[in-house]
Image 1 (cartoon, rainbow, N blue to C red):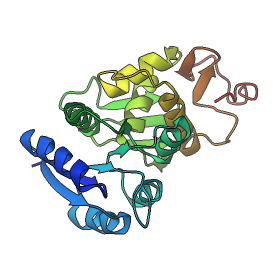
Image 2: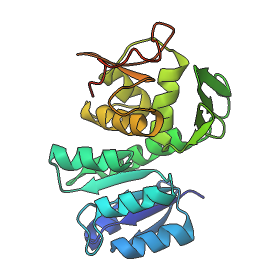
Image 3: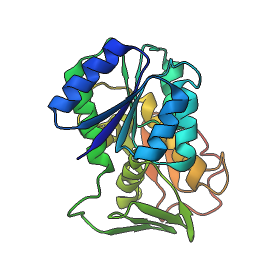
Image 4: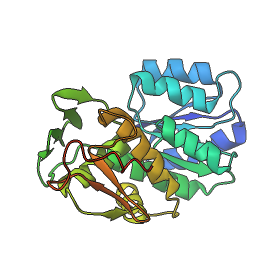
Length: 240
């Protein structure tokens, strides 16, 4: 059974989310403290974590940062902090999605299912291996190596890279990328794509600020490098 860990210090929120998730068929664990949540995640290995930002002790951003040091478990942030800066920071630290309070519990269940679908190994992928230059993706195992160096990605980062690498040279708008990685576009929050691209570049690119693999198309979105791109021809393409 798929296990969800809810981390929130508001009992009413925990009860509401737990009831809807259990009704949807999930096994639910709960924690109201950041340190306890980290220990529980390590011991119980949940399939997804729903994480509040405003926690006692270690806050949600710190929990996300520490989880990402050892785990690629999908993370959905559930928070009353609706400032863009907080959302972008959470995504840059490795969260896969976010929902602001007050929230619809039905939407929460839908978001959880969408994130889990992205994290699942596809039963019948278009191709089990994707190669684009010296980047190689093994779809079934969600493994990535760049010039022989293995790179750890979150499920969302992997899905985004796979989409770009399958069609080198094709320009994807932020809206297209958002729709593709979310399955359903609940809201057009295109800054989320920039945050995920920033994380991908940090992990993939040999020189920060001079992207070799993921190329910005000013005013539109992004594309994966193709034969037009020479290895040293990226100095002017460092826009985020």
